[in-house]
Image (tube, rainbow, N blue to C red):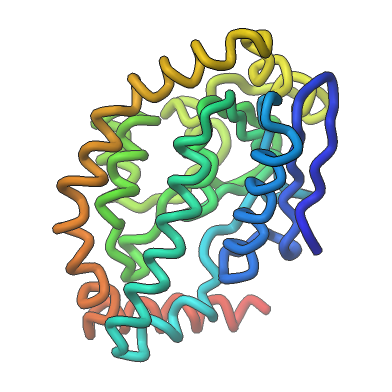
Length: 257
């Protein structure tokens, strides 16, 4: 089912609903691109709020889907997987209108990166987990994402969260600066909309130009330097040690089902 887009107070509110917890796989990537195609075609002047459903914003990559690709030993297949994943994150990150993640619950690994792609993050105060746990489960963090993480969280917090790979409770995530504002759940969307409407539509060009200038160093890093680093990702993702870690994670998931 295509992501639902509703206009609320002159803001395009996008409800991610690919699956119950928005694990990220080919269908999620396709839904994201289709939604942003619609935003560019039908809602081009409007700011954007991105949110999940239930108690989860996004649980990150679909392990079953991704681990099978990593374990295939097919480096070209892994490159295709990463190319698709990278394009979805950059599509959000570089969108020229104000973008706000209305974080309604858990945002883990790729799910947190999706939130970090947005200009602003507003979170509902509720029990939830947040973090970048790729490294402890045997997934090298792509260099392109490291640049986005550092841009959103700063070098120190970016390094801590990436390398330690801990999943944080809400209060810890708030202290680390994952969110620009925290509100009660009933106020999540309205507060996110207030962030998204930080400008009037006649200032869209000023916003787009300023955002592009702010992101220029990050985009240059991604386009010119991270390409060489990420060229080694397919080998790293299928590394024997990383595969053992991935298998342990897969088994943990199966035991909890």
